[in-house]
Image (tube, rainbow, N blue to C red; front, side):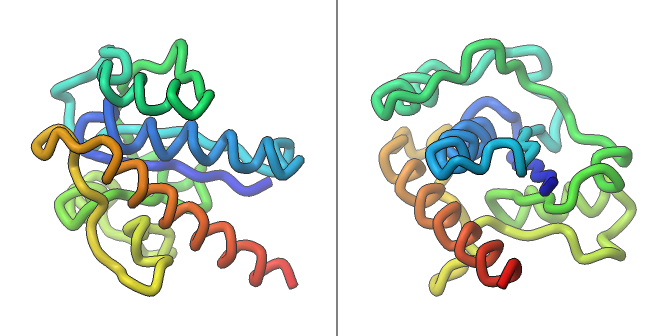
Length: 153
């Protein structure tokens, strides 16, 4: 089983979008039983809050539900439990390393680092552009799945 934790600042936009998009992707591929997928925040600001309404709408427009998801903060136990801790931007990465005391096992990545054009996933909290965020995440997830597939061969 491959365990993946997606991480963003508040766990109400980008990381839950990535979590539920990835869950659908592996389910559609008939691989759901091979993965454990979750998401978390590096901050405490949104703890206990549901996925932000525009993010829920974007997921729903693609037939994806995120019902029952509430923001939680990542912790050091997550580092030991998950195989991949995948964040959305440089600030998330720094905060993940701070929370976990570094990354000695090289488990931490930015999602778009799996693509041919590494960078940061657009933050819709500031841009308001949930479609761009969807596109960034989709591109990153597809590249990540290709990496996993090539690893299995």
